[in-house]
Length: 263
Ligand SMILES: [Zn+2]
Ligand SMILES: [Zn+2]
Image 1 (cartoon, rainbow, N blue to C red):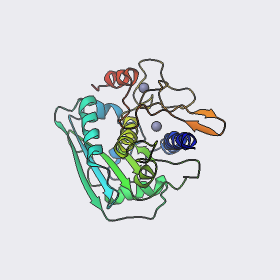
Image 2 (image 1 turned 90 degrees about the vertical axis):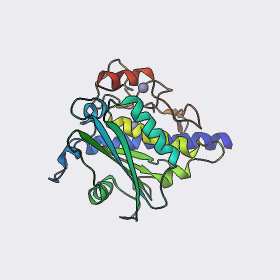
Image 3 (image 1 turned 60 degrees about the vertical axis):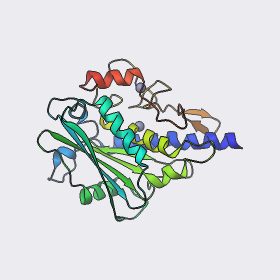
Image 4 (image 1 turned 180 degrees about the horizontal axis):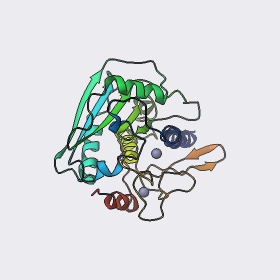
């Protein structure tokens, strides 16, 4: 029974990434019409090089907004800071500014509603040599979730990522499940890597490692950007390398980031 539950959990996690990227594809081909701050309302992957390299921008500011009561663990924020410092060329510094806000909008959320929330609460945009990223932790699930498919996070614009904290909590910290910090951090950094252009999503491939069955993901099973699903009867599963640790990028994905200006 435990084992079946285990597989079920991982099927949910795998579909999380899958549905995240389906949304990306459907929403990623046009610029939003809002006339303000258009530099931060471009399709996913547009700012990969700007985020990675020290060419146009030498500093990164992350606006990290949570709905009250749905904040991630502090260690998750530290894990993001550590990852960004390790991979991005930003000699001017990387700053994460966290704040919590009252609930806005009604769960469950569509990606369009998430965009509306961003438009209402985001205050930081590209400014001079500072590039801005917006990370939102919401208090509800994604509207497309079903009994068999859940979304934990989505990268939906060139500098925007959303995390569905109640769903992350539901599938972490029980026996056989990933730890809360590990699942929050792995989901967050996976989605952030999509705005950094992985895989073949604005950052060119330096080797042939894009998964042909799951576009924009990596073919290497131990990689953070992997999520090829394995169908076993009705169960799909994806590997998470270690339930208590953030899944790392493999050398092929790191090579892509480095060739596009990262470290
Ligand atoms: Zn993904
Ligand atoms: Zn990889």
